Image 1: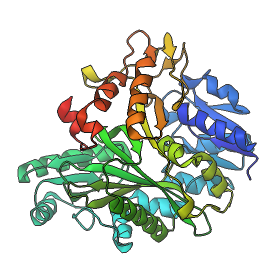
Image 2 (image 1 turned 90 degrees about the vertical axis):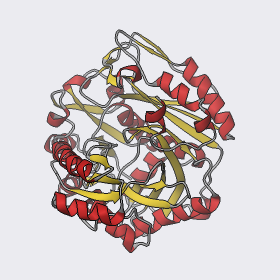
Image 3 (image 1 turned 120 degrees about the horizontal axis):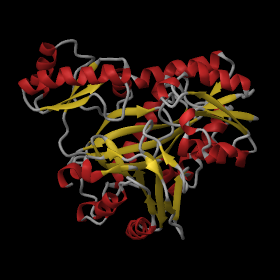
Image 4 (image 1 turned 30 degrees about the horizontal axis):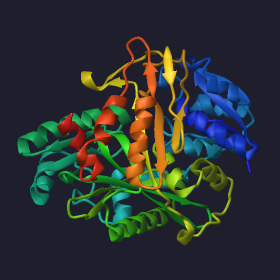
Length: 447
């Protein structure tokens, strides 16, 4: 087992990793930008180093700064968390070239799965259903039109790199396709320094279901069941739950087995998530792999009782998965709401500012993963998520009731600060959510 780990991230996930390391008896080294100087969670690490100015491009995305801090801190491994450099295969390779273990998959698997076109080829090899589309990148408008005519409109233009909903545009006719192709490519180039895009059939009104997997370096792969992430806006998840309600058991088993086949074919190890769309006929289609820990990992932890961060660390240290698939439990129902400092009434405008009043809900079945406190300054430089409110109960009906109560208890206030909590409350009391009959565009259509 490692003696010291550097956490190449900030905020909620940095604190989450520090806590897991403390329970494993591992010392931690934190890094921070000038904007995060003085954050409370930094005092819980054994050491903390400043790695640059507020801008992520000059701090958390500077691989050489992070590796220098790791060498200064004399660590054996780096945990990247999610976002920033977590899915950067070059960074993973740099870590290992520096004789520092990267707590994540091998860079070869990250390269293959980080490119959505390459990931699609691996999925087809593993006999995992994929959305009909182009065999590779589309090089020009005429090729895109040919593919779209072949598979039929509407289609989806998708960036081959990155994630977070960037570089994704629907097209409903040829004129629309030609216009959106340029826009999607430009957005992808700006966000990921990779303008490559491909074409897929647009699955109308799908559900978004993903499967959590863990795999060790000895060929053992487990799925930890599925999560439903259908409640989202512009491909950004708002509410996640496990297990997925209203999903036939046979589909549930098939989608989980498909995820295991996929990661085995890719030569993947550590934690990861295979994402799928499920259409109105419960046919599922692979869309991508997130080669890292997910924001929504707590709902899987709650229903399985497995600490995913600890498993990531053990696997990176060469440990063997001791649990067998038949023994992986799925108990009760867990739901997570992302608490974003955004104003849904103003187009989800970011709301930075200083928190002057904070009340965190508690009670049986309630968990709040966050790094905020009264006096904390929500920064305009980073993602707007300030916490995750998670509940776990024996049944989904009880979990929804508990979540309503917890949302009503929670207070995050300060000059100019709004959050997405009121919208989350509206979503979970809507009949479409209660009956699990929604789709990925439900939130945008309704609010």
